[in-house]
Length: 632
Ligand SMILES: [Zn+2]
Image 1 (tube, rainbow, N blue to C red):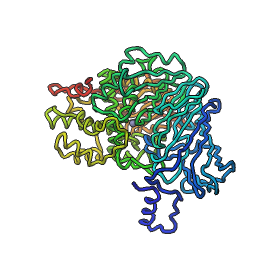
Image 2: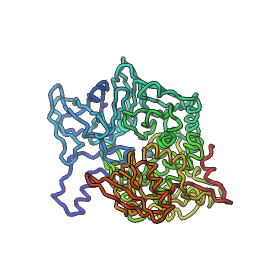
Image 3: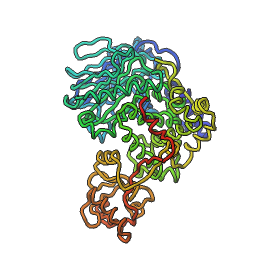
Image 4: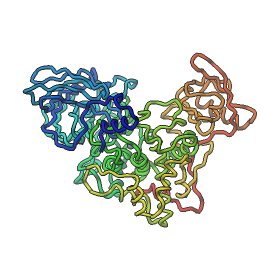
């Protein structure tokens, strides 16, 4: 593993930058033990100001010491450590304040000089939760908090993160309960002391705590327990019906049937149901952070579109946490990551997230099929950027390029398309494996062979592209390198999987129930496959398909549609107008739009009617899709 300094130095000399290439003065991580134990105590009681107050003791020797705030976060695959929310840093030794200096070339590194006679330094700072979502992810509310250890600790430079021991405690607001993969050592009122753990696993073990809390056993009687720890804005949102509990329990068993091994000694889903704390979906080895709106259980009929979240994050314990792309597995949190294999890490997890939602009963089969149709349409006609300039492989750089900032033309710029584009590639692989083996082998065999070894271990097991190809070849010999590269480096469309599975993608004028549910969540009309535009609430233009009919008429995502064919805009009015323009080919869809303070009329010359994606059976071909989605 190369450290950042070395990589920069090589690059600088290759570019002939010589003395102009200044480098951060930060020691590269070494695989040697750190002497002593970090003591990290977090006071999480200041919910009024949404501030976590950190007191930390770092064993040290006299001389220079560099403390790092984690920058490259696993699961984010990017340098998104929230250092802009760190404030109030004071470092002391033997009761005397030590001046600190931030490294000008690595703003996540703080240098101090440890005086003679000192054997440790004391560090105090606050981590300030965003007060609203414009500032970032809100992680503290009057009812709950989400504590991530990377946000509330510094660690010494020069060591692999897993060679540093840490002992931690958290003081929670009075009476709150918590869930975490961390193990309890002792409890002193509202202060919880956790058992010592290495720093890499500490950062991998966040906490959800709340005033309203429920812990549900998802595998009663199992030697390796799996719990669902739920916090909510109010006690009433914690009501779970027996049939809802059952499908979540099924998820655990379906995973075990697929992989035949697991990579934890216990697993805790951390789950927030909140309209105040920001949503989340972040995987860990022995837990996952999951955040949705309040109605997940209590408005079950309306929450279907979110119901692949837990299966997605759970799947990451196998794919992403245990098995990880070799270029992504870094020794500390301040070494740059490379994301070239995210089409496996996220792409296949996206695939199993959908499939396992169906196998467990979180989704009915037709719901899963409708959701897959929406994905397929995206990689059929909804990503002009894929056809015109980018590849799925290139989008694996996006966690570092865009860091999930909103984009002006998402469909053309593309972003993290290795998720859903990757999902389509793996569906394709499943059909190919079945073709090659006369339906004797499938992607289930790949999953078991690639992710299902070494039961109980959660030591990272890395892989390369060649390892993926080798496992596929072991199941069914074929030129998998070319097969995958064509799809990863090509320009689509990526819908090949369905034909091999006995289904085809079609478009008609009726949205599926899932398409309607997705529209309802946004509150607008999605006319991507007809006019080439999707709306938010009240005529706000969200996305305009690059070179599509609306784009050609002059519409852009910054505009608001005020009126359609002379009438006030509504989701129904715009759909009626598309219908009318299909019946009378001389009539365009006429929009009155507001662009800053300017009003203008745009005429969209489109006459093919409403178009929504569906999957339709191909008569006479075996129905392998239903086989894939069926419970094991
Ligand atoms: Zn994921």
